[in-house]
Image (cartoon, rainbow over all chains, first blue to last red):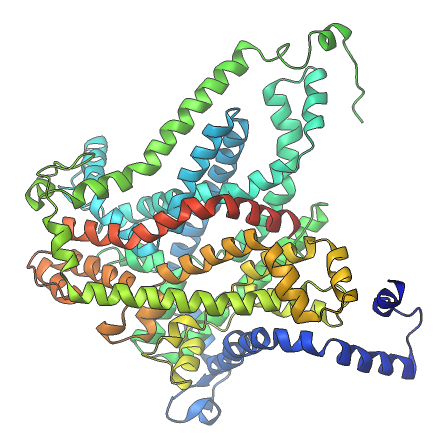
Length: 320
Length: 308
């Protein structure tokens, strides 16, 4: 047994020619393993990294006929054009508002729901509730938007009737700019709040039950146990998710927003993601649209590293 | 450190109950009722859609349908099911989902297996490559240019290949493989099994839960996808059913007749009931598989998220 395992163990010192020999030995020993991951590697190279390299058209006036390399280099012209575009402030505000709705309303609701679920004593009920609240996550945005269209159809949709009565309005909610954000928020909450709890419940499942028992003996009430045991135990998860969320601030997601937008609510519905599509695919401004996308991606990258750094400064566990 | 002061009486009374006051019990009851109501609220949209799918257009347009079908009929189902475009697109969805999931599972499991080998040189780099693409991508147009230049427009491959590895799924899978007992693989190695033997005969059979979960995630993603189809497919006969549905609503929100044309339906009215039926038929396969896989994915995802 030891002979086979010894081969796996690292030699204590590996420098100079020994290192080279080891590398060669590894290459031989692992060659079948490398072959196994080759398809995946090709996938990443072709479908993930090649487009990153292709993004250099953001710095050119890309004309498909001339090809990427044949097109004229223009530096940061497209970035400047985008940042000085009169549409830019509106896009930024629309994007940030939707991000804020997601971060400040939908995300806390997820935590609250997870905590409430965790307090359910009856296991069968807990499982049933979980099963039901996860379902909307598995629906396509086309379905979610179709459902919204039915429920909020002017004069006929049951929820239209309900809200129209509640607010004393007869607006066409599907087209009214004032209703765009509330509807989008409702969809987000409906679709993903339940699903979002899964990761918190996983963290909570890992909490040592003896802590609760000890706290009970100490006379801690339900709320005190939640405050001093439950919440601290999901705090690392919250931090990690916050970092990830922050990196996604400019990515509102295309599908939901695009499907919910129409000619009447464009003023509030246009966000970076849909703008990239309209400019790039519909109007054919390839380079300009790529510059917008690249701008978005780089800001996201900066944000994610920034929050990660901040989290570490405050002694929380980061993601890197 | 919190100093622990033990109150003997309280210990004798047994755990809890002492402070499980009326307040706590009231909270428990409220919580239960609240969550049940919440479930009802979550289900409400489904119920309405289901009710509308069995209702007469007249009743829907009069705003009478909320919980229960009014003017019960199955004509709408019959009408949608007779629509050839619908079935063709439905078939496309099945084809894309099955092919896409098969490819995705092969790529994800093999790559994750390699990543889970702690001794492997360059393993960190390989993980880094994958994680980096989670946070940074080339953007819409470069992807579009790539797919066009590969000649994949108006083919199934534009739908199936770009999403073949989800990094999140990959990482979940990797941590699952890492959690398998090392001794098994070592023993298998001593018995003369190569990497493929270990992978195929030891690791995969032990990973049924996570594999089931990943199959669910990938197939749902392919089933639900419409954006790739929207970008890369121009021919109606290649559309997946999600795009059929999308065109139905896009049409209905402008004018009913245009909607009918967009969806290729012969009925003049793309009324709510037709939308409802199309939705139900689109969603049913997911809802049918979901309960069976759910018990797997809760454990599968939890394993991944606790470790990852």
